Image (cartoon, rainbow, N blue to C red):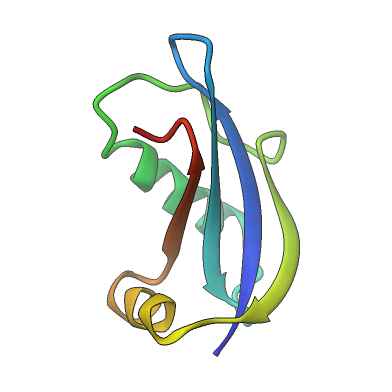
Length: 87
């Protein structure tokens, strides 16, 4: 499966910057849907964060996804890769 990678940086209330990628099927291009996925992910965190919008989340590139990512996308429509300050 080909996926689009959306590079995302969201400020945390403690001043750190969260960095994570939102992976979606390459056929999904509606940014409001993708931002909604990011917001749903942020709601799972035990700490407060800033807003997620086009300023924090941008399309980066497309790539082929491994099976574990494909499975996550089939289950919930998207997949998150946590990079920095996500816990």
